[in-house]
Image (cartoon, rainbow, N blue to C red; front, side, top):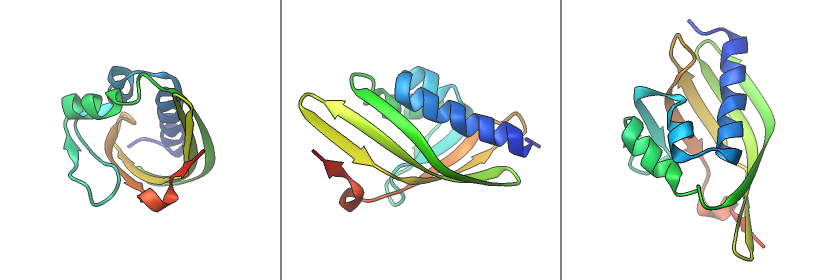
Length: 123
């Protein structure tokens, strides 16, 4: 089983990749059969290929992330973070709460992102 330290490092690596990586590099953090439900209530992306396609949508944007809070329990983590995305002349800021589960190797086995369009700030 992944340790608390392993899970915390995996979350930090995930946020680093969301800020600077590609769809492929983000998807590589996930187990082969992982799921991503972002936002909660949407149809989950299943498997690494679908997850890579999902994250590839942000590749052409300028992004940054900040971890605001994290709680780890066993092989799961809930964390609150800020992501700022700049596209053209617009800046979009959102602070979702993600809940992830992890395999023994600290790969992400599932991710659920809690946010709604009302949480998105556009400037």
